[in-house]
Image (cartoon, rainbow, N blue to C red; front, side, top):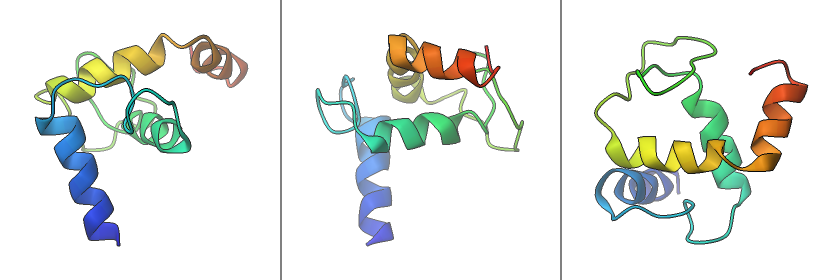
Amino acid sequence: MWRCAKSITARTLLMAPPITTMLGDTFTVADAYLFALTGWGQADWLKSYYKAEIYFDELKNLKAWYGRVLQRPAVQQALQAEGLT
């Protein structure tokens, strides 16, 4: 199951045309979780919270997706409430 989910995520975020969220037009827990995990990595377009040795600089679709999620008012509120802005 993990292999299937991992390949779907990779295909969606790395090779598919830009999308609003991971599963289409509906923001889901998968988007929230990936947003949190993306913050562990590093890229010039990303505020890293843990600076793990994971580099996202070349992932243009991930960058675009991250930017769209970051613009969501609820995401901004959550980041502010956690002191992450």
